[in-house]
Length: 401
Image 1: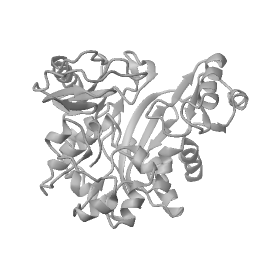
Image 2 (image 1 turned 120 degrees about the vertical axis):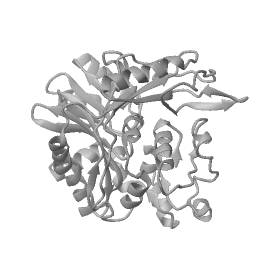
Image 3 (image 1 turned 90 degrees about the vertical axis):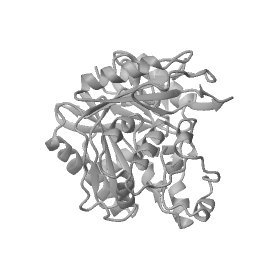
């Protein structure tokens, strides 16, 4: 397992539940993951991975995927779960993703790609408007501007101040509705959606404040039935898989569709090319199928044919505990207590220091609970979260409310 966050901890847990009884290692991991999956030295070198006899590499974060880590593994004869760099551009470049959606006929917002402030302002036809940095931004590169002054300031920040590098900005029509996250396993030929989830991106309660990497999630989602999920598969996920196969870059791994359920049906806000964080922490505890088998099938062209997904009928709610100052800044080195309580706790920004677990900045922990319905799962998650303490603990009280 490549990665160090709560998503990777949740994947490790799911892999360890496999009846195949795999031995799982993680690099770099964190203080919590290390208790279940020993760290693996040399994971940045596919030759070292091959020499160690690793059967499967699962890449968690987007940065190594966009940088071509799967390509390097393939060149070294290592089987890796995740898209090659050319396919990972779906997340690495929002402009590229838009171009692919356009070619595949996938419903999404109208857009213009701009490279200077004045062109950006001129491209805006109405407010609110979505302004998106083209490259990777850890979930923080999107601003919904409500007037020209805010739009101009955002464009100055992104284009002139290069807050997210030298990438252009995508000026995008604002989509009204409610959001939905759909993670689909892909084998280069077909897409198999997992249970739907909804996440909470803003730092403040009532969806206020700046965007974060995600402050919580829940699964399943009320009103999202089998018919809607099939519509998402047929009109959104499968056309993208088909288009990338046509381009000679078949998509293997997780196609994460961030959707807006609009009055005109689901439309794509963005694509990611890996398991979502924190959606994974709410989805995988409900999965009763063998995750390892599913990942093994995904790396083989057509391997997901005949795969059947089984789910725990209970609801799952995940609450993220972040460090003081997140997302603008974050503190670290604060001792964490109360980890022995109820709920499933996955570690994200943690480290070990002198025999104690301490914060390592950013999103620190994820607390997930299952319940007969969403409200009971929510109450259980917060009961477990309230027991955990560290200086500067920050979390929303309205996740899944």
